Image 1 (spheres, rainbow, N blue to C red):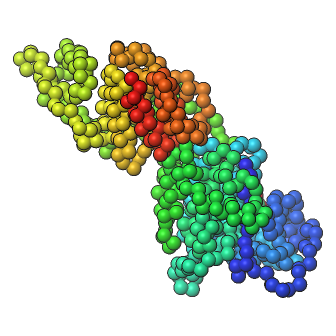
Image 2 (image 1 turned 180 degrees about the vertical axis):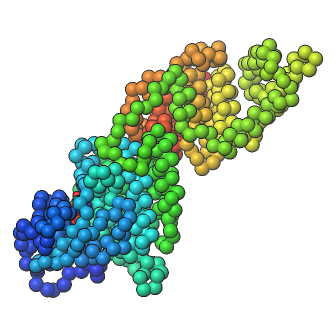
Image 3 (image 1 turned 135 degrees about the vertical axis):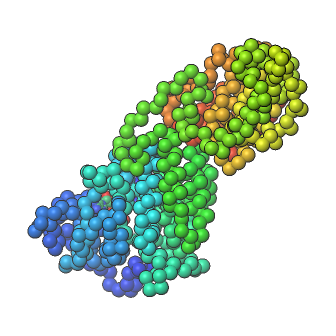
Length: 568
Ligand SMILES: Nc1ncnc2c1ncn2[C@@H]1O[C@H](COP(=O)(O)OP(=O)(O)OP(=O)(O)O)[C@@H](O)[C@H]1O
C-alpha cells in the first residue's frame, strides 16, 4: 500500500514563513545529544523533523525525542508542545516528559512507543487489512478522537503514520501521535466553539484522509472532519491496494493535486464501500452529514464496530493484535442456510415479535392438534397437495380435531403482497421461502424473486439475514435442478450452493462481482446458469464478505426476476 504521508500545509498564519526574508541556513547535522538526552537510533522522520530513541543522561530514562531545526519552514514542535498538557492522562495519549530549545534544536521528549500502523501494515506486505484489525482500529481511533475532542482539541492529521501501538505491555493499545497540526476548536477565552466561515482556507492536513470539506472545499475543520478522516482511513485499509487516490503517491504538481482532489470529491460513500460491511458506508455518510458544531455520537459508532466484530465472531476487539490472530471459523455443515447467521446474534426482540405474530395467524392455538401426530401428517400432506394444485394458494391452515374430525379450513384469499400482512421481515422471508420450495415454474419464481427484493427493501437495513439466505438457497436448488419442478419436496437431497464454495473461497471482498452479475443476468440462457449466479451472489453477500445488498445487488435481483419471467 502506498505510504500515507503527504502532510502539507501552506500559508495559514500559524505556519507561515517570513516572506522576503533571507532563506534560513541549511540544518546542521544532528548532534550526539540535545539537552539532557543522548540520541540513539532514528525511529522515523517526518516532514519537519526526526524522532530518535534517546536516553536521559541523568536518569537513564529512554524516551522518543522529536527534534526539529528551529528554522524549518514548518516548525510544528513549537505548536505541538502546547497540546500535550491538554491531553495528558488519556488512554492512547503519549506522555510528554520535557521539551525546550537548545541551540538550533527544538525538542520534545515523550513516551517511547512502538511502530506505526503504516509501518506494521507495509511490512506485512498485504494489500489490505483484515476486518478484525480494522474493527479494532476503528473502535480505538474513535475513542481517541472522543477523548481529544472532549479536551477541546482537534487532531487534524489522521493517518496511519500517526497511529502507533504502545510498547509491551501496551502493544495492544493504539496511541495518537503528532499534534503538530492540532487545533483547539473551543476558544479558550470564550469557551465557545470556533465559528464557521465561508472564506476558503488554505489546506492543512494530509492528502489521503483529510475530509473532502477541508481538503477539497477549504472549509474550517471541526470534529466531524477528524471523524471523516478516520472513516476514510478504515475504508482505505479494507480496500485492496487502498483508496484509489492514494495509489500514485504524493502529488508532485498542482495539476496532480487538483486531479486527486477531484477524484476524492467525486468518490461517493457507496462507490468507496462497495462490498464492505454496511457499517463503513454508514459511518462515512454519518460523518459527512454532521453539522459544523455538532458533537458526534462517538459511543454509537464504537458500539457499532464492536457489534460488527461480535457478529463476525471476533473476540477481544478492544485490543489490537498484529499480525492478526488466526480465527477458527466454525465448520460449515450440510446446507448453506443453517450455520451462516445462526451463529450470529440472536433474533432481535421486534423481529421475534413479528415471527410470533405470524405464527399466531396460523391460529393453531384454538385446538390441540399438535398432540395428534396423525392430524399433523395429514394436514401437511394436504397442504402440499394444495400447493401443488395451486401455488398461489396461501399456506395458512387451521385445523380442528373436534369430535375426532380432521378439518382443513378453507384458505383465505391470497395476500396481495407479503408486505401487506403486517409480518416481520423475517416472517415474510420465511413465507416466500415456503412458496419458492413448492414453485412449479419460472414464472412463479420470478414473482417470488420480485417480492423478495421488495421485502428486502422494506426498511433501512439491507442486511441479508439467515432467512434471506435461506430463500436464496431454495432458489438456487430450484434453478440448479429442473427436476424439482416435478418433485418439489426434495430440498434435503439437492446440494446447497455453499457446500463447496464457502469452504474454498477466501473470506475477503470480491469487488465488482455483483456488478458483473447485474450485467450478465440479462443474458442468462438457462436455469442452471442463473443458479450459478444466485450462488455467486449469495457468496459475495455472505457475512464474511459484507452482508449488505448494494444497489447493484438489487439490480441483479430485479434482472433475475425479469429473466425468469421470460425463460420458461
Ligand atoms: N513517541 C514515539 N515513539 C516511537 N516512535 C515515534 C514516536 N513518535 C513518532 N514516532 C515515529 O516517528 C514517525 C514520525 O513522527 P511524527 O509524525 O510525530 O513526525 P512528523 O515530523 O510530525 O511527521 P509528519 O511530517 O509525517 O507528520 C512516526 O510515524 C513514528 O514512526
